[in-house]
Amino acid sequence: MPDPAPAAEEPDEDPQETATRLLERALRLGHDKNDDSEWLHSSAVKTHMRRMDPSFSEKALGYRSFNDFVKARESIAELEESGHERLVRLRE
Image (cartoon, rainbow, N blue to C red; front, side, top):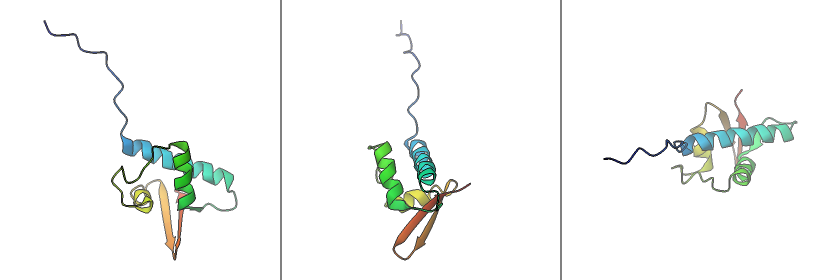
């Protein structure tokens, strides 16, 4: 007689979705703290994301850079690249 099926476990969450939600949270928190500008430095956003989830790595998700990671989420974030500055903001 076959073993009974194991109790249904929660399926592991898609790491891409987890990272997208983390980006969105970091942008919302950054905007809340920085009322004078809706644009945030992408490096500050990445630092904030790493504080919230030390396991975050855009490279582990298959992106060459953090900017590539943000560009892939254009439905929630907008990237502004001018000169050496990389700014990101939440799309509303």
